[in-house]
Length: 294
Image (cartoon, rainbow, N blue to C red; front, side, top):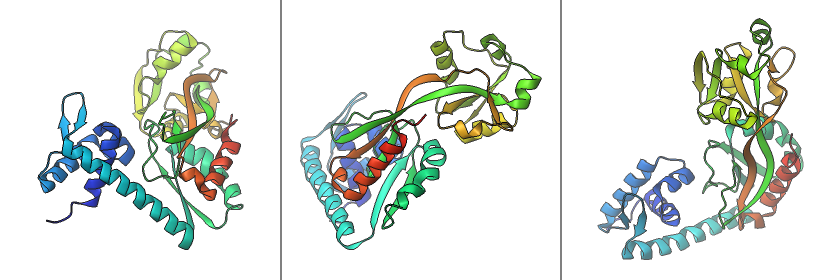
């Protein structure tokens, strides 16, 4: 018989570790339906059922449990041997996964200082949505908006994510907003990752949620900020990551306070990755740079 697809085997191993198609999808950066489809294909090619599926749970069959234990060991060994190969024969590569806004506004503008200290190390920065609180399988280090609380991970809290209410200077001059009630009737800008952001903000400051004239949504915080700069409406801007968008010709705070969201950024890595000197060095640099970022 032909060997199954390595991609399908990897998907099964990750799904088996989580016993959840959704969590496996988050880690692999694909959809849950894609995970299910790949495992169905694997079961079909093997002629063996690997999981018992119910509406709310996922369990191994006896054959699935045995196959998972073998594959889990195999992939761990493969990853270990591959990393050892890099260390002995290749240029060091650190794979760093970061939320898009953190990458563009905080990490990349400061990364030069680390590169000057580690000129023999290449860093590959990839982005994943801030809503995914899962250390990617193919990352050595990740920055997450939330603690994944996995026993297999080492995490360190960096700083809190707050929000500020902001609009363009000209917008505030033309349509002054002096109190919370004045937000009613304005166009509110909303990030798709936080559809309830205005309601949560109102709860935090102890007022009724504003009643907008209309809502404008985007899946990009940079686009939200740019729209606010152009006078499209009023936005909740991530702080301190969005600090550089404020200035004499850019955004202005509508209210002074920085309102906590209750979320924190964390740096995360697997214990075995922390044994690599280059990964530990980058992790220490991230902590030094961002532990008290404000």
